[in-house]
View 1: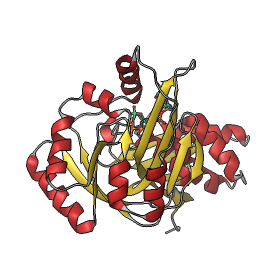
View 2: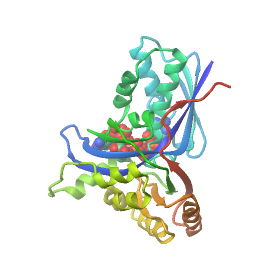
View 3: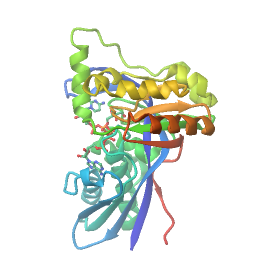
Length: 300
Ligand SMILES: C[C@](O)(CO)[C@H](O)COP(=O)(O)OP(=O)(O)OC[C@H]1O[C@@H](n2ccc(N)nc2=O)[C@H](O)[C@@H]1O
Ligand SMILES: Nc1ncnc2c1ncn2[C@@H]1O[C@H](COP(=O)(O)OP(=O)(O)OP(=O)(O)O)[C@@H](O)[C@H]1O
């Protein structure tokens, strides 16, 4: 028997970053939006835990114990007193090491798929606890929609969204390491007073109204200067998207994927076309959000 779970990517519409904590993490006000770019994770009963991966960028995905999907299966098995005897197949479409929570998505998807396959009866709260242990972005991949993440991003408050937002994503020629981007944030912040991260009320209002112009005014990413410092070529991609009529242009999370908010689907297609033709990025994708989080697909 197999279970397949579909799980979306995320874009951070606000990423406010506080000072480094004693544990090395940073407190965040992290407003997540799930967008319609998906990985599909299938788990099948097997003699032993095994991970395979297909799709763009799958060559860069670790297939050993460090894979977040494998760690999720082990964590749920451990909690529910069984062994993680499953074959996990990841069909990847979310850019790898792109700041769109690809690995986190696979962790949440594998957790939900194993839960369904094994019929563990774990509560939603227990699943969210395991997600938080796996990584800061993993709980949001389970929940989807839109949410404010506080703490290191793992404590979620779901948000109302009054419409659909249209995005264009420009994929970069290489990845960026999330810890390296946070370290660069610390380096750039040295000697400065870092305010407590708080969610922006105008941004939450824009989401609630489904108002793309107001959202474009309000989006911010405190990791953007750090990502640009490590990957200066991203500035040209941001400029190209703005010139093509994007309402807002920003680095997605820790990057290096850049995200462009468009007024509607037609305008998103125009921005995507211009970015593709401009040659400043490796590939271009269009996706809208919010969309639901990890979802078990009907069998067959
Ligand atoms: C940049 C974001 O993607 C925005 O949503 C997340 O904050 C990162 O989430 P993630 O990839 O799930 O990160 P984790 O696996 O929890 O942590 C990876 C590394 O990122 C850094 N990290 C992450 C989250 C956080 N609030 N502060 C941090 O400093 C730490 O160096 C940590 O060792
Ligand atoms: N299932 C997985 N898919 C992709 N990468 C994984 C997975 N499991 C572990 N990894 C590791 O995580 C690293 C980051 O990949 P990922 O695609 O999650 O980055 P990201 O989208 O930038 O993450 P985030 O936005 O959460 O910071 C990879 O380089 C890889 O070594």
